[in-house]
Amino acid sequence: MSGSATVQAQNASDNYLFNTKGFLSWALTLDHKRIGMMYLVGVMGAFLLGGILALILRAELADPENWFLTNKQYNQVFTLHGAVMVFLFIIPSVPAALGNFLVPVMLGAKDVAFPRLNLGSFYLWVIGAIFFLVALLSTGLDTGWTFYTPYSTQTSGPVVAATLGVFILGFSSIFTGLNFIVTINTMRPPGMTWFRMPLFLWATYSTSIIQVLATPVLGITVLLLAAERVIGIGIFDPKFNGDPVTFQHFFWFYSHPAVYIMILPGMGIISELMSVHSHKGIFGYRFIAYSSVAIALFGFLVWGHHMFTSGMANVTVIVFSALTFSVSIPSAIKVFNWLATMYKGTVQLNTPMCYALNFIFLFTIGGLTGLWLGTLSTDRPLHDTYFVVAHFHYVMMGGTMVAFLGGVFHWWPKMTGKMFNDFWGNISCLVVFIGFNMTFLPQFVMGSRGMPRRYATYDPQFTVFHEWSTYGAFTLGLGLFIALGVLIHSLLRGKQAPDNPWGGATLEWQCSSPPPYYNFHTAPEVNDPYNYKPLTYRGEKGWEYVRPKPSTVPQQPDQVQV
Image 1 (cartoon, helix red, strand yellow):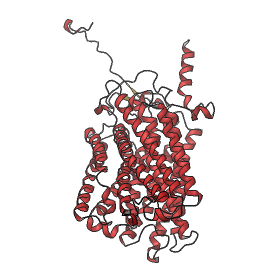
Image 2 (cartoon, rainbow, N blue to C red):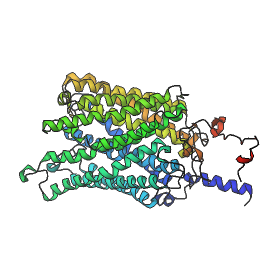
Image 3 (cartoon, rainbow, N blue to C red):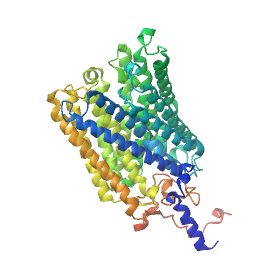
Image 4 (tube, rainbow, N blue to C red):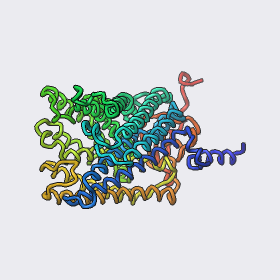
């Protein structure tokens, strides 16, 4: 083959990702990158639906009385919003979407360990999502996204169908986690030891362990709930010596580790963003790596802090309170090490870095306000108030959502081969930051003054806080739509992205943008993932590795290598 033909073939391979050959080329693909892109489109669609439902709720709550939703309709929209955001967006957003695209490329591998299982996981997610949404939208479900008994065993809504949808989604999560565990264990290239892996892989590995160990508990729980409704086995019914609180124990034994399924991958993203956009090696690499494992471990031990008011023994609640404070230690280690990474670094305030700084501010507020909810004396008056709503959203949305957006902007040039408008990306980050704090800071105040959560109507004294919260929600929505517009514009009008636009040292920046079918034309060179010394800036070509020239000093006879 001639030289020009070789170049053309290579370019065709590089651009194959978006050279669609029909629906089946995507529907039957085994390529992890295309599966990741399909996940990305799916979770962003779920995010759009959940966000619109949130705006409907906030519009209703701008007035203390019902003005366009009845109480039952409010409960149905509330249930749909929570279920869509948790099960269809937050949990799969980073592990399934970004993780599928990035994990093999970061490892220098051709694909995940089980490509067919990977495609099957995606279709399970699609089937579960459709099943779940049809069940929720058919006649409406008003149990709340937690499906608490005894109400969920007595209401007339489609509880069984919705729980079966959750069950199917759980299998998708388990298969994805299993695939990543095997991939990271068996497909690391020579020279990539555990402590030469990018921290995003550490976070993904820890998350996958939680997915595999905790998700079966959720599956068993929702099956027991379905059996309770269909045949009345009495697990949660006091008439048959059952206990409704048992459901809460089962549910939160999964759902609190699930909090770290949501937030740990986001923390892995922030570790990459802080290092790359400070152009400085990560501070305390091993501490951050071990903290991911510690968070995964502690996540299984603190579910009881959701149930301090449910009537547990005093000794039990004291133990859960102490464990809750313990989980803050590895999280704090990450935050302090990220800040230390920026110290004396060459910080570039581009869109990904601005989202990373946004994350640190919002996640820190979420973490610090959790101290009040982990303290027994203050949790009791704050339980089931808007203080909990604000804390939850600062951790989940201010954490996972913002990290997800930062990761999308960071790897967008690599995934699509297109650069975005950095100015408007920064504007979107600023509007998201303002809107988010306008939405949820007032909720801390009204929660501390006794405003209960989940109510469609409320005492008029809280009107001003709800009004500001509603203004903030629509501002936040504007910022997210700006971000979406920036990404869509880049696909249509964006400049061609260089292979390494940010100066990253991990392996994904050594392949073309977007990567070819097998990710690399030649085997990538494994180095320290946070060593930026061999990198030099080449203008429009981005950053490139510059290897030291061979020494011209004559070798001594005993140093000659044959």
